[in-house]
Length: 178
Image 1 (cartoon, rainbow, N blue to C red):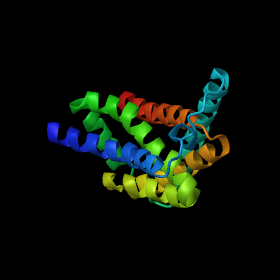
Image 2 (cartoon, helix red, strand yellow):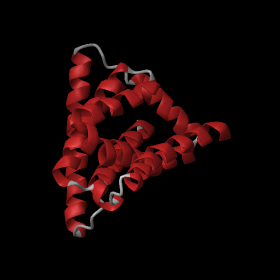
Image 3 (cartoon, rainbow, N blue to C red):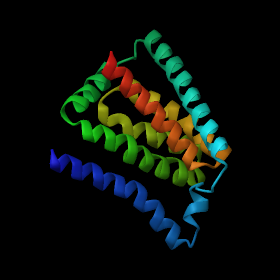
């Protein structure tokens, strides 16, 4: 258990550390590059809720289409998450707070500006292949497109983080309560 958590922590350090090292090396302002400019509270709050709603609606459409195509194997992911909730509830909290932040820093704050929406979303989708679910990879890719587009449009890592956090929290809550 401890070994697995250390591997997860190391992965998140890499996701956050690589962009920061790059910004230092290139003498770029990390706050500006990552879209960490202060906005008015209500702008970030409403933006986060709007992104959450867009992610949720997109997820429903993707799940429906994947079901029609007989590609919806999300039961694999559900089983994995349910096991983590039961056996490692603190890891779920860690994943929601730290991993979501690390993903937003790396895939949106760093990669979108360097390789674009499509390629950063593809990398995000492929990272989710560890679940062993085709639907998870396709869904993560498509939701990654939404997250990348939102970041490019708003240049706000905070809105992306909160929208992504709310979406993941909602999905986990649905799995736990069902």
